[in-house]
Amino acid sequence: MDPIAAIEAVLFVADAPVSAGELSQVLELPPAEIATALRTLGERLAAQSSGLVLREVAGGWRLYTRPDLHPYLERFAASPTAARLSRAALETLAVVAYRQPVARGQIAEIRGVDSEQALRTLEQRGLVDVIGTAPGSGQALLYGTTETFLEKAGLASLADLPPLADHVPPPTVVEILERPFRPEEPSSDSRS
Image (cartoon, rainbow, N blue to C red; front, side):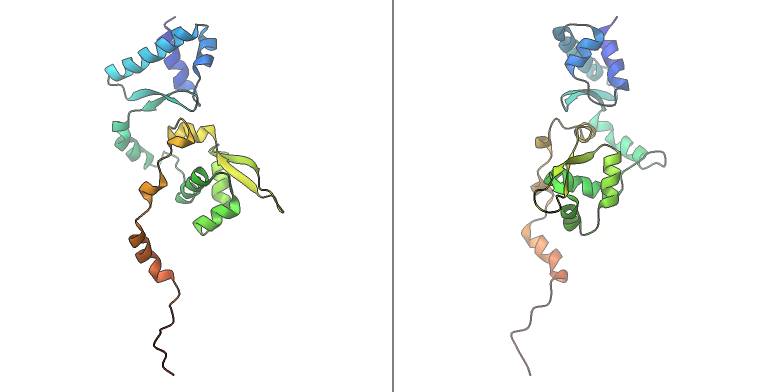
């Protein structure tokens, strides 16, 4: 048995990252040999200009597409055969990822609309889950992201999320954007 080919086959069919320990058990090989095979597989994929790369994420190993091929994947994602998350689901997922643990009411307050359907979609896809309840009366359900979210986002942990500051406009732009939504201030020039 070629351990590199066996690891590649396992990772190809796995729907979640596979730990080196699990690979060691499945292939009945010592951990050191698995570590060497993983390193060799990663190098081989790079040397062959494969469309795939090997990455360690969420406590395990996973095959991903090469970043330079993402434009083709984006075109494919826009095709009718690709299933995508709605804008509402993506917004909700971002709120959960950055504010967790977060209640449904807090998500609605941030987004300005009810997010129940979006949360349901994200739960069905395994991207978010209930991780607790809020203290106090009502004990609202609190949502957080899952290992599946980390895997799909290609993150090892939530610490790898890009900083929000990179996506927030400067205060002067926020001021201009908010101006039309502010109530008019009474004029200091009162004419009766």
